[in-house]
Length: 225
Length: 221
Image 1 (cartoon, rainbow over the protein chains, first blue to last red):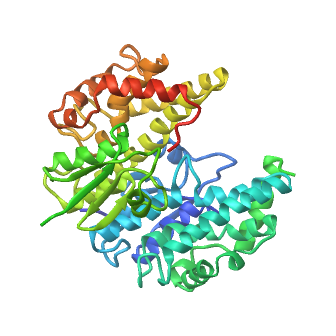
Image 2: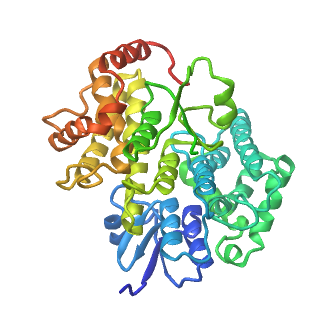
């Protein structure tokens, strides 16, 4: 029988870790959060349980490791079914997975990469170009949201969980890119506020001002002017 | 009456993945070949976000992204499952499918289009590491799915068949029998599988297609 010892190898600023923590909070599950020092030295547990990517989050269920945040969130949903994070029909699930794939699409424009590209950019032209690409991605997502409260409809779920943590990094992009997400995408902005009103989300997502300070330090580390 | 349609391109390993899953489950479908150089109104309507194949249409409902479609197929027609039922094993299968897509296929794609020799050398080294990792995952089994083909094998179809043709055309020698005996054995089993065979484009035609495209400036459809 499962003892249900749940551990997350974590970094407070990582939106990917936030996803897992929100999912666990939605399910009312207790877990241990172990902070990783990603710059100083990764723990042995991290390196042995995620030898391929060596990244956080790693989720351990009674010692069995899982990596990749979207995979972990799906696992949590399937292992502890209530309340459901994914919709109930196969077709609606396929739509949720499609948008999860869009948000995280590798080797292509991702939500996190496109927002980060703004504060990573050097020079006005590069910043403008990065901003333009990011806003394009936001508009596609805003289109997917449509008039709904959440991505799947009335209930907060999988796609919201994957997307909302990344929005905590938007303030940093707004400051370095000199724009406001609310002006570009008012409906998406309203969705952000709606999600942040949820207790499970509010207690996990850090103050965007803290993320902004974190980004300022990252830029210094990367030597970005 | 179930109405299943698939918009695909005969060359695309992505649309062939969907065909493979449908055939493994004995699901009948209408195949609609797409000309990606001149995208049809249907394709643009059914996949406005990416404008790519495959698109699956089931009783009028449209779906895109091959790995997403595979999950839908497995949930809708549960016979001959392609994903494990146990949540942990299922999570691992999804992990490996994503690894194949991002690191293996993604790595190969970058190599295929890299014109700079030094850069290509680095990419080949990186990709080799990924293939070593992937080979390790077979763990003495016939397929990634165990005794039978599963989602990970289907996700690896490009490696299973298309890669051989790409290597022939480009002269790249990344996955060879002496460097990757275990992976090559899996490739042999994969292409010999009775259902997989039905989904593989004819080798000489595929060879000609790659020859034409790898010489061309851009292949991004």
